[in-house]
Length: 130
Image (cartoon, rainbow, N blue to C red; front, side, top):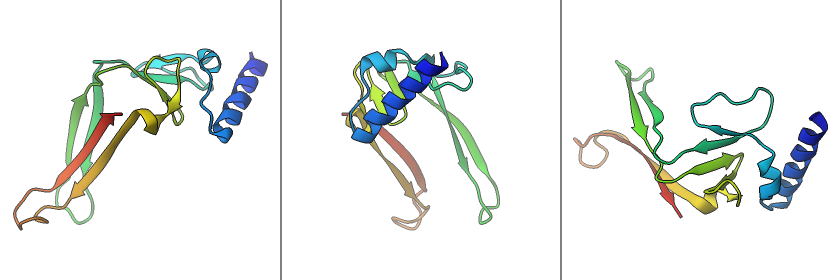
């Protein structure tokens, strides 16, 4: 078991260094953990974000400049399954690509009043399928 894990890690490191995606056969040896489930201890794993499953996102605005802290918990859901391992991603758990080849997006931060002196601040994250 340890030798197989080391061999797999070596193969993954080699393909990552070469810029080649890991093969489906190599990835099939790793356990798949659904978001929210407990991953195996001391072992690499593939993380699955199942389509439609609730994905909580914590928001927090705080700091020494602010009188109060604001927190919230938002829930989003993916429209399709997304498997991730390090910087690789897959929609089917078999064909792997660099994650930025499948998913793109952007982050936006605006301070209150920046546009017209009275507009609210904004924290936005956008994630899109490519």
